[in-house]
Amino acid sequence: MLLAAVCSVSVATIYVAQPVLAQIGRDLGAAESDLGWIVAAGQIGYLVGLAALVPLGDMLDRRKLIGGQLLLAAVGMLVAAVSPTLWVLLIGLAATGLFAAVVQTTVAFAADLSTLTERGRTLGIVTSGVILGILGARVLAGILADLWGWRSVYATLTLLLVTLHLVVLKQLPAAHRPNRRTYGEVLTSLGRLFREPLFISRGLIAFFLFASFSTLWSGLALPLTAEPWQLSTAQIGMFGIAGLAGALGAAQSGRWADAGGATPVTGAALVLLTVSWLASGQATWSLWLVTVGVIVLDFAVQAAHVSNQTLLTSAYCDRTSSAIGGYMIFYSLGSALGATATTTVYATSGWAGSAFLGACFALCGLLTWALTRHTVTRAAA
Image 1 (cartoon, rainbow, N blue to C red):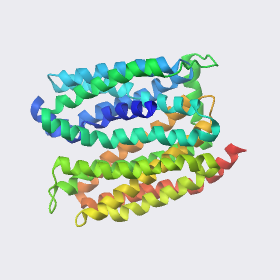
Image 2 (cartoon, rainbow, N blue to C red):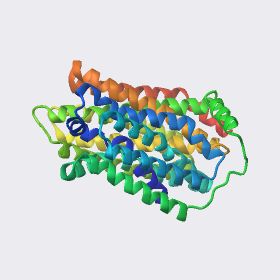
Image 3 (tube, rainbow, N blue to C red):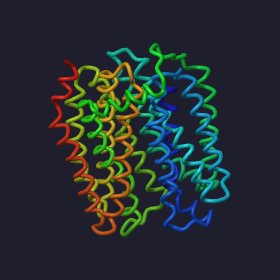
C-alpha cells in the first residue's frame, strides 16, 4: 500500500493541471494557445525520466533512489506553486515530471519484492495506485482550486511528496542490486529490449491501449461542457470516480495473471475496451451510457496493463526497472498521441469522430495481441 501511495501521488503531479488550466492562464496572463504547454511540460519530463532515470533501479539501492526522486519532485512542485510567470511554472513542472518517473521504479521494486506466484496480485495493487493518481488528480485539483486557487493544488502535492520521502526512507527495505553494473551497461541493456519480440509486442499493445485511454480522458470534457449538458469542471470530475471504480475492479486481473492467464486476460480486456466506445460515444445524449463506458474502459485498460507488466517482469526478472521503464515509453507516446488527436478530430467531426478514433486505437491493440500471441508462448519456453 505504501508503494501504491508513492505511485498515486507521483503520477498525480503530471495530470493535476488539466482541470485548472483556465485558472492558471488567467492568473499568469498566459495566452490560451500556450496553455497546452502546461500539460506537455510534465509529460516531456516524464518521458525523459523513463529513459534516463528508471534504469537506475537496476544498479542502485531502490529505497534511496525512490526517496531521493520523491524529494526532487517536491522541489519541482514547490517551484510551480510559487511561480510568478508561465516560464517558471513550466520549468517546475518539467522537473517534477522528470522525477515523477519514480512511479516505474516503484512498480519494478514491487515486482522484485514479490514471489513469482504473487507478482501479478502485487502489481495489480500498486498499479491501482497509478490509476487512482491519474483519475483522482482531476477531482482533487477541482476541489482545491475552487477553495483556495490553483497554487494550493501544487502546495498540497509538495507536502505529500515530502511526507512520502520520509516514510519511504524509514519503512522500505534496502534494495541493493546483486549485479553491480555501470550506467552505460544498464542503458545498453534497455536498448537491447527493443529487439525482443515479447517486449515489442507488449509495448505496442500499451501504445494503442493508452492512446485509446487518453482519447477518452483528454476529450470527454469537450462534449460534456457543450450543449445540452454544460457541466461544470467539478461535475465532469465526478466521471473520474466512475473510472476509478472500474480500474480498481481490475486489480483482480493480477491474480488471473499469476494463474497463467495473462495472455487471455489481455485479449479479453482489449475486446472490452473496443466495446466500451459504443457507450462512451453517446455523450451527446446519454450521461448514463457515458458512465458505463468510462467504467468498462478503465477496467479494461487496467486489466491489460497489469497483465502486460506481469509478463515483462517475469520474462526480464534480471532487469525489471529497464523493462518497465522501456514499456512505459510506449505508454507515454500513446497517451500523447491520444491527447493531441482527440481534440483535432473533435474540432472537425465532433465527439462521434473522437469515439471512432478511440475504438480504432483499441482495435489496433486487439489486432496486435492476436498477431503476437505466439511471442508469449516462446518467451515461456
